[in-house]
Image (cartoon, rainbow, N blue to C red; front, side):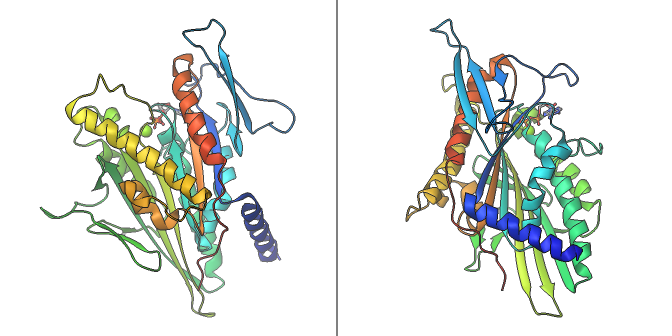
Length: 366
Ligand code: ADP
Ligand code: MG
């Protein structure tokens, strides 16, 4: 009976997604730092009643030209104010995580300027039960649900890999990297399976394993840069979990993929300040973030050509974007008045993405 209810719930969830399209955008505002300080800030307001309750955000941006600040209104599928806890945020994505077990391909992005809370949202504080982010929580859920399904004859193989894309180059965050003169070449087969040459993929069917891997990857991400924070803000980090499910009794098979992507900081770095290596970085970040936007727009517009190949990130994620896949984007926003201009840019990018509808969900089940 419990299973029947569960099946109905999932069916309903998928029906709703089909009606609404397969792309969701959630906005999350981080609290003022240091943590514990008041979280109400004058330039960000949330509608407290009506249709936009929980979905609307209003941003005031002071302009140099005019005395009066400009007000901008946005609506997303969900807006989390600065008091929102990790658990509350996870509740809203848990069905999407479930989809990956059911055989869907899922991408969850965090977009926003450096310091807006992207890494906090996706990874969080690994040692803290309350502050753990979406990746460790997603893994917990996957384990629990997989265990439950094992009693119905399902067997799961689960492997995770973690990489970063820096200056359009892939770097393995778990393995040793390719041998000299070789690269992490990305290729896709006709079944939509992606492989990245020489990329380490780790069996994660042990609770706690993912925590270890995340800690290792976060450390790796910081290596090789003068300022660790500065480096991580200029690279995309991709966590990819592949779930291959087989049912010996019924012969059913399903392969799902769950991607969680901590994007490079979206802030516009002024060209005049950047030169040499720094300028190249800036150009690559701008290019790959706008390429992601372009891919989503093209899918939404059902354009015959989707420009996946314009960046390493969109090419890597190609089978997981559009058509039968589900996408969620967190737009992370900092609450400080100084951040308002960047927040406006982030909200505008997200609003463009939010206006899109992508395909109809199809289960990748044979
Ligand atoms: P980003 O990855 O976007 O650069 P971070 O996730 O590193 O930003 O967040 C910047 C700082 O703010 C970190 O010290 C982080 O712990 C803190 N922070 C971000 N979001 C929250 C939140 N929701 N609650 C408490 N602290 C947060
Ligand atoms: Mg970060």
